[in-house]
Image (cartoon, rainbow, N blue to C red; front, side, top):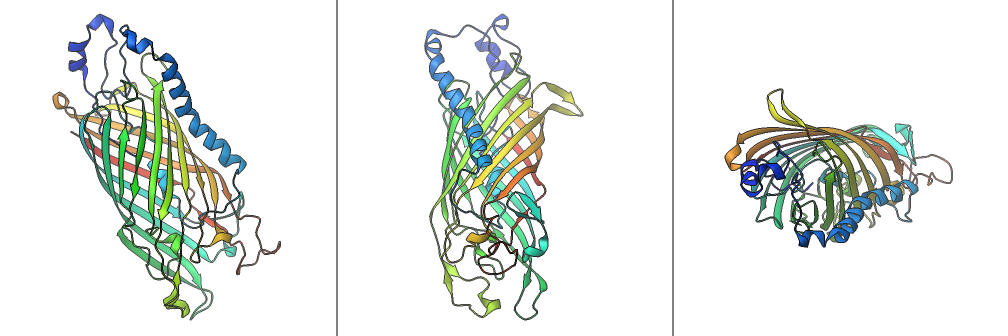
Length: 407
């Protein structure tokens, strides 16, 4: 998720701008404006615009949720890869009023795909030649807000992935594990948050670069660390207050990832199957991820932290078609819904200069998963082979941890 820096301790500044009787007290780490003074005439002329923008921004994830649940698609999608762009949405790292300055962060994401799904049901792992995909991401990043309207972010991942699969080359039926560890696909994103004074609504845009390797031996193209594609990233967010005292807040976020430049490569399994010179095409499908959440923003000075903000969110994903000679269209495509509790911990380092350390963590648990190729089981016979559904490996949970320093 794009995470520009949070200016969280502006009580002194706002005290100079607004007399005490005319505003609510600002709290450590507030994420929404709590000003209660009379709005100026220009602000009064914009209620319709604000209402429409708020409605659209918050309903987009709900619409995506509905689309995924009814399976409104005629295409197939990526099978084995985890759909890890889901980590780009959710959490509390959205732009806040008075944001300025920089932020450095480190992230840890974890996925262990062991459950085999065909359609909307978990099925026997014996159908799938792939048995387990374990992935850890170790990301570093930097973001900077130039002013209340514009910001930029760069994320550089290092990915460690292992694939355990059944081979039929030298020893038919034997299990082999192949590993790939390298720099992943770098993301460069910008954000515009100048629609409203409180920066509650914004747009995100950028590119994912093909910096990750996509030729590791023994690993299919759809399971490689890198996709080999350049992707366009487009997103939006909105946040607001559910209670006048700023204690309960809501937020919605959506991110669309559309590949548009592709790279062919030699079959990464060619060394093992005797076809090392075969060049394959691979066109990863688009993916949409969205999150809707509620957080409590009124727990201060607990367990040594200046603020603790628990949250609960719903995350939905849809992945579009995988194509090309290196793709696996008969074992690809998913829609999913996940429930995700989380918490953000805030510690003040230098209040006068808005320097803050934050630790965020959540767990994302799928409650609905639909493998798009679930009905294609070799004319009704669940036999492993060409043009058959083996299923898709799904992780029973995903873990996300982010540590950041705002300055």
